[in-house]
Length: 559
Image (cartoon, rainbow, N blue to C red; front, side, top):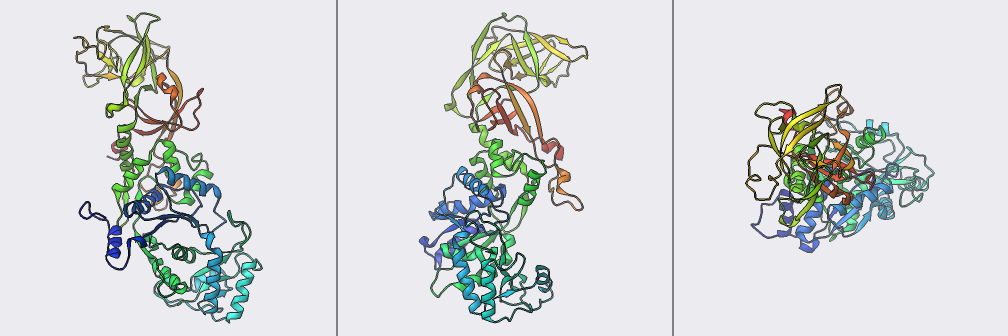
């Protein structure tokens, strides 16, 4: 790295220290090791950005290795989704690897450990094993099967492998110490019997390695230099090193595990089990529902890779867990889309506006700037006519001086168009306003340079021409949970905090330029928020998702 350019985080400091000691730059290799038992979420995005970001910083390879050791929960769908998400974030892996690639090697090493007296087959139930492990303040007790002969252990382990042992039957345990201070070192399980078809190896295996046995050995096989895990794996580091010592030889390069703290996000859950429950119980429609904190959900909602990478970079890595307000993530996407998203006009709660002195049947096309933050974005033409839609909330029959929108006997400007003045209204039998009648100043056209066009009025409204408007389904997404820590409230279930207002669907009327918008395209509906085209959209029935409002509306609720 170039010295003095920026301050290093503690992960980079570890790497730099290793490079200053006995590591060479060509020794550096990282990995991202997801388990394919669900879609990746925003927490994984931070880990992806950390590991692949280190690869970019040090010009070092980063492997994508799937921890596919539990066929009961893993599916090819999840593998495909994970690969799609990483590529969408803009990263490339050096090698696509799977723990299942190493099943034979892991088994062969386990056999050697049995022969060397470092592992044994235990015939106790899982409950019995848990009970005899002791407590953090009390040592465990040896299994009655701990001193089985090598030959008996080899025979039983072979039966496990061949499927002759029933599920939840025997397990293979490492023989370390039942009196170890670290409870993970009290003869941990290495293999369990699981008669499930694997998404890659089919029915070849009837036993599957546990995480602690497969993870470190996979790092060792792939010559990973630094294995970065979240803080809950700190107690696992001792076991990680112990297992690697059992399979390595003098002079072998041994990987190093180090831990960083999770960055938890408010109003969010990231447990894959709970996310799956949200899908299965119908609180959301799918793993990529735009309300989900999955990368796929955020992408469908309209978040882009740059905003997520900026979010991950801005929260950094640390040694202590903390709660990041979701408003910071929303800020990152607002800031990014403000620079990139075209400004367009759409009305979501329409009321008809009739310009009584505008010629009937006439229309004109007005020039509108696409994005004032991007000079290269150019402009477009929007149609203007006698009958328009405006937002219902932008009109009051009478209002105080602080209301800067349209009211009777007062003037406002229509964006990119003319100054109008409220004259009268039409109402239905219930007293609801059905039409607003106004007049316009034909010399006040925006950009015309006339004296009338330069006249100052306090309010500017967005609008769409009724004749030219596109009717669209607009999905107004909001935060999925009302509680800051939905799974951290005592005596409450996280589902109790699902926001009943997390999705509202309305019919919107949009300017015709949006006919050409494609799946995933982002725009700003002026004065409303940022939206993107949903994959459900068709030319006959456009569908737009709200990515985020223009301003943080939740800060008012919180205060």
